[in-house]
Image (cartoon, rainbow, N blue to C red):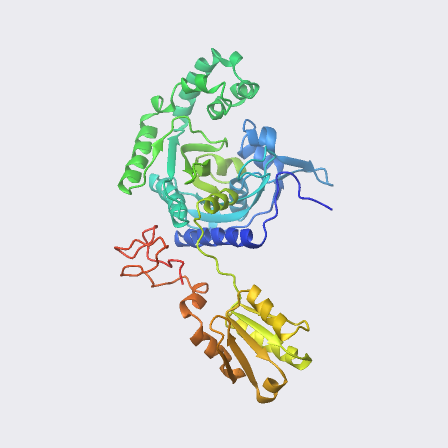
Amino acid sequence: MFNVLKGTHDVIKDEALKYSYIEETLTNIAINYGYEEFRTPVIENSELFTRSVGDSSDIVRKEMYTFDDKGGRSITLRPEMTAGIVRSMVNAKLFAMQDFPVKAFYCGPNFRYERPQQGRYRQFNQFGVECVGVSTVERDVETIVLGYHMLQFLRFRDLKLLINTLGDEETRENYKKALKEYFGQHIDEMCNDCKERYKLNILRILDCKDPDDRPIIDKAPKITDYLSDAARERFEKIKEYLTKLEIPFEVDSELVRGLDYYTGVVFEFHYTSSNGNNYGAIGAGGHYGNLVKEIGGPDIEGVGFALGIERLAKIMEDDQLFPEINRNVEVYVMPIGEKAVQKAVEIAFELRLDFFRTEVCYEKKSMSALFKKAERKNAKFAVIIGEDELKDNTVNVKNMLTKEQVNISMQELPSYLVEKLDQNEHQHEHSCECSCCEGEECEHDDCDCDNEEGHCCCHHKHDCNKA
């Protein structure tokens, strides 16, 4: 028997449905913001990540899955997706052919060799966005707001948005000199990772998680004291916008992120579940000034973020944030006899074209066994076809809840089911529009609608996820 590798897990059945719900929700919001989908390879040339993510990052130093292929090329399973997305933009010459910004969203697996822990795996999935080609403050703000909006739409409450700025080139050079002087007095007392970061990229020390090093790091100079006038003005504008948009935030002067390509604003979304489980950062991103040029494109800037699907799903499970995902069968078709089986194939085909969740039993079973199977599927209606029904071109339809049974023509079956089934429920999964809460008080006790205005948590009228 083969088991999954350490740090990986199978996503099946209900868990897979929940992943799909998250990904579909985030996709719809990204499209609403004008983003287009990009899908890039899982494997890339290793140099793409060593140049973009940075030799000093823990990802490159410790966590990448890197190997030589049969042609002797160094290949890496992508540890993050921003570098690959920007590489695809450069390869496709989008910066020469398209108006700026180029806006991409993506979703897919990434790989990092790190210690598995709650909601963290060595193979993990991310949903993210990249907005490349325009460096205005407003684009930074819009991207942060998009991430906040996405998490709110998934019913996350009490989000903590942490922001910081890495400033411009002048800021970072002055700040690094101050850190060199400060940490130079303490580096012998710090962990081996910090000693290496001191040589490669001293900003990485601020991201150290070693509890013995934290008292030293907490007393280090703050980058906000070294901001150039231009960098300070830009950061102040970002904070002003967030305040006007009523998005709560905290400035964390030690927030630097673990990727070397970030410049300017960086941010993280933190969340603690209702049972007190602190998940830390569930999504993060920032502004990058040199990444596109480093990968071979023009000297333009970008901003983006990524959300971890596994962590989102775990938290939503803990806090019961998922809407009821209805996967019960609507119609269970019961053929009696070989000829009836052939007709059942046709009936099921037509019903599924009309989006009825339909299941058929093709095996020879007694009538009582067929009804038990229908009950286990939580079917709402059983459609029974026997020899008499075939002769008359009819079917018997039994309401599994009320036990009412009627005989109708096969042609009437779809319209009969539409009439009898709750139409809102049947159409709910095939439409992104719903007026159940619009403009009036919501009558559903456990949805997240704002009863006074008929809006949901994201402040936009939309499906309240209740039939």
